[in-house]
Length: 187
Image (cartoon, rainbow, N blue to C red; front, side, top):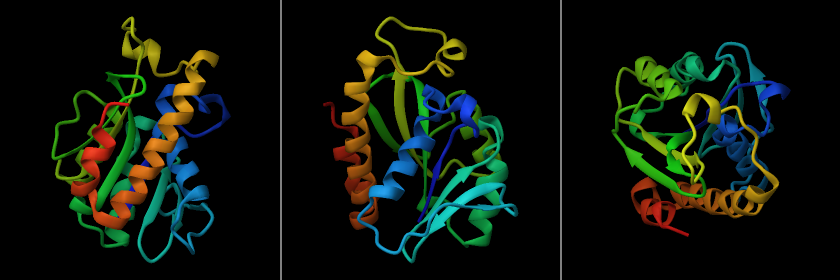
């Protein structure tokens, strides 16, 4: 399987809502039950940081969010991974912060990173792990995505990271279909 954590590279964007997919994938790579996972290394051919083992390829595009497909597409072809075996982790401004939704074969819903991946793969038939970033009092997505999490949100963020990394373990062990109930459950 291929897992891609979308976000923007560089310190300027670290810990922003837009980078939650990228940062959670990094955490999973560090704490995962998957043994023999290599450290992330820059692969200029894909313009991405890559970590892999026999069961999974993890990719952190070094492109800006709206060009994520430029990294995901070539990596998918190189590793000969079918779109149905791809999971894209990304922020979603239409979902309330603290909620997650794993879905398959859905439209991009206006998310520029997903639109780029969809163009690169020439299909929507891949998995999306959508991570809610919206505040209770709705904020325009363009203003919201580059905001950092508040100290009050850090407690929720910690639980969210645990839930998602456990869900990613479940995807590897039992497949995305089996992991959907756990990942999509309200908590």
